[in-house]
Image 1 (tube, helix red, strand yellow):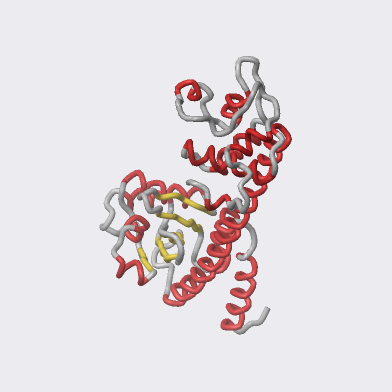
Image 2 (image 1 turned 120 degrees about the horizontal axis):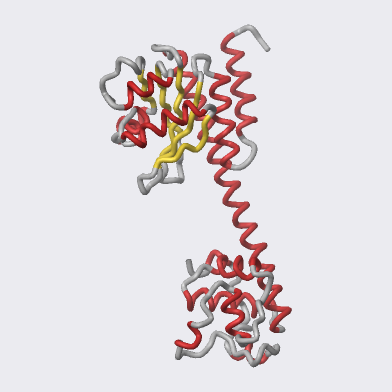
Length: 297
């Protein structure tokens, strides 16, 4: 490690960038708060708070229960620097920084400030984390035990750090989406195999059957597949015919069949395999679109 401060920070940020670009979103959040305490000298505790589009606020990661409590108090009391920053106008939000030099003497939050000071918090620095591609807002909250802890150099380092955190979060979000898509296709494939084995359908017919149930009952195709796999296959019962058993295994109400006047999605006869019946419903159409993302919901 070099003694030159500029080069030292460059080396630290290079290492930080590599460290943050590993793992899924929750583990990335944990790395962010841990690295912030290590990288920004006055910072004793750190949290990441996220404001969702529906107005909810979550503490996504925290290094200490004390810091989490400071965030929770803001939610409970409806005031505090993080809430002010998260709810601020676009001009303040684009500036990206919000500082509290002396928590004990700050009069902007008469309920929160005394309780935060009693926890041992002297000063706060909140830095916006860019969440491009999402309607959520994320903030990196740096807490120090001493008042007036953060100087201009710390502000600069915190801003650079937040940019690295933003990039890491975006990478983690994309990885999560790819992982979820792969898992969805895997589960749908298993469900197709169950239908193929039980009812003698082709691969395209089994997918078309799931798609039609999805459309008819306004349930995501992925959800139907997950229910079928979780059930371990078609749950046979003496009081249910094959179609009602399939309804039950897909997580649908089999009793609804008795109230329905329209034709069934596929014709079953006492649980026997009927490839011809499945084909007559159009489940064997050529060129079936097997993309689960194109299904209803």
